[in-house]
Image (cartoon, rainbow, N blue to C red; front, top):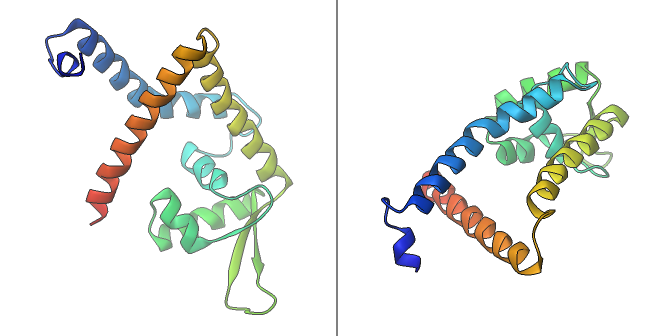
Length: 159
C-alpha cells in the first residue's frame, strides 16, 4: 500500500499533492488576512511569528528569536524596534549582567499572541472535529511525519 502511494499517477496521490500545495501556498495569506481583519492591523504575519516566538510569561534574547524565526540578528533588531514602537514587546536588561537584553511581551503582545494561538487551534479543530479516534491518530501520524520530513530538510539546508 505504501509503495502504491508513491506512484504519481495515483489519483489519491495527485489530489493530496494539489491540496498540500494549496495549503502551503495559502496558509500565510489566510493568517495575514485574519490579522488584517482583527484589532491588530498594524502588524504583519512576520511580526506575528516573532511575537509568537516569545513566551507569554518569560523572555528571549534577540539572538534566540532570530534563530527561531530565521532572521539575521540585524533584521531581528529592526523587527524588535518596530514591535517596541507599536507596543507589542519591550526590552528588559538583566539585572546581574547589564549586557544581556531580554525581549518580553507587553499586555498587547500577550493579547495578540493568544489570539494567534486561538486561530491556529481553530484550524486544528476544523481538521479534527469530524474524525473518530482512529482517524485522529492517523492524522496525527501523518502530520508528525510531514513535520519530521520538513525538519530534516531544514537541518540539511543549515549544514
